[in-house]
Image (cartoon, rainbow, N blue to C red; front, side):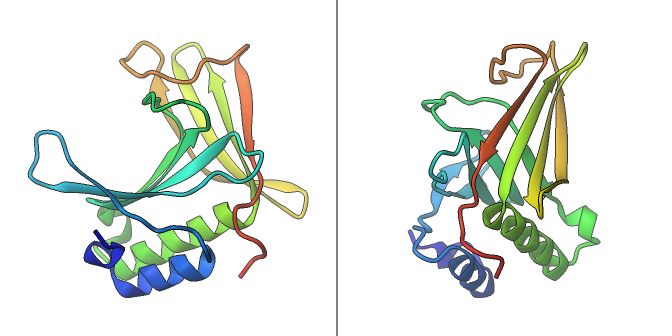
Length: 169
């Protein structure tokens, strides 16, 4: 299936401009217990990266990260949702925020810091601009829930990824 079957042309054009030469093949799968489809694009990992990004396009916009070498094992890791309610129903504002965030992530060195606390696992994504780390978004999950997270030595681990795209367009 073609990406244009699931996403508006302006979004496709921006993705292609941001990531020239990157295959934009949609991965379509049914959502469990629903008649809706899940549509995502898996971006390649940068050379030397410890994680890669996955773009959720339907049923809602999301940016996920996945540990390189997880060999298909589903793990709770960093993600950022872009929910309609957060943009007061404005699809234009939602799409703009999605694309701006994606541009930051693919055009800068990024890191995801995993911390294990007493009750929670937390994941914080940051990008490096001019030698300074800037927060993008953080998520957490209960340690004693049914969440399978990457195993780390100690209480804190930082995963790194060089920029996927060249320059800040």
